[in-house]
Length: 397
Image (tube, rainbow, N blue to C red):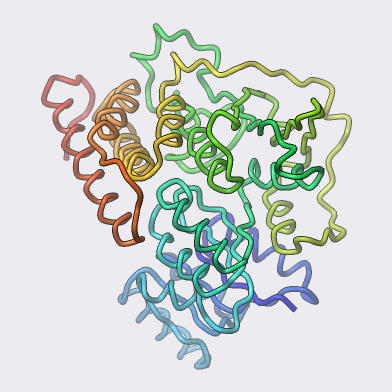
């Protein structure tokens, strides 16, 4: 019986993980949960799963949940809150496997502490490896525990790598849908609206990741994540645009052989793969071969999508550059969604913040968080500066 902690239990990946656990009650048990701000769903999960510990984002939400649980006659669940509470969830002695699915850098400390505590971690959080991948992977190596990717592209690479040794790998190919502006001329980018950028042709996702897909920054984050997870230099991690999104990733070996991973577009499959690794167990998540009727591929246009080029630059440099990349992107995307800046301003702000980010290795998670805060403040100042220069869109709050 594998005992599981979920960081981000009320989010999409968290709910999918609970669905997998429910389908295999003889294999998995929920030990602890971190649920963010959604007290209603956290209460439902507490009643259903009876975790040892349940953490919420702040003390007010935690107090409200404790009161509801007492009223329901449930007293055995310890309710905690904040970053210390999430760390408790991730490092509880009864936990065998931690699913890291908190969006952004909020889950970074708990994920790192889970690795330090010798837990096996399934990563569904890009930001952890983007901003602190060198620290996390070094600690996992020290502990002798695997980092198992849940992101569909990296999970696909992990599966393909079982077909050969790392020294036999020539390169890794990450597929990208191309987003809503794959065929839009660059000359029209200045007039792109928020509504257009949120109209993704393939996926229904949160607003930030949808904009990141439109700029190809999401694929850039995945390049950095792949470099950290598989210990590859950026030049051996390639992006290929594949609008059908049928092939999740490919691995090319030195003899010219290429292995591709194909499966249903259902996150329960990579979650199940990570939870049961190195086993494979039966599931009903089937892919229809008839869907392979057409497969298109083309290289990404780095001139149209400079965010991807910036991500490659950050991956090659490492250190604070990747922190600046992620922080500036989050601030710039939020400003674009608020109609404070143009679509084309997103890569410009990121490039400016990256330019002043310090070089050198990162010594600690606390240093990562400090640099993250500094980069966000700088990016926010650049948003205001661009607005003051006469951007015709929206207003700074």
